[in-house]
Amino acid sequence: MQQAMQMTVKVERVPDVQDALARLEGGAILIPPKSGECQLCAVVHEPADPHNRDSLYYQLVFHQEHKRPPTWADAMAHCSIDVQCAWRLHLRKVGVAEEVLGVNPEQN
Ligand SMILES: [Zn+2]
Image (cartoon, rainbow, N blue to C red):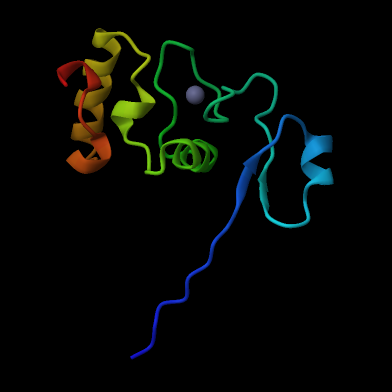
């Protein structure tokens, strides 16, 4: 039986591109979001809207900090209840699985 190959990748968030380039050796790096992009998910969106849970940047940074993948509930935890309800309705309509949608933190 063949064992699955395991690979550990150290992900490091760095404050700027020059610092990122300086740290290129020895592990994976994340280039910081560009000016005008959300600094948490590296996507352009209104501050009142959810972070993009599907953003690779958001997923890597979130996983590093919380030791689990983010859910949409995490990505919209900072949003108003109205925005969260609208997004949950939309995400269910487009077929997002409940485990990816996550539990509304307001309900716990
Ligand atoms: Zn964001």
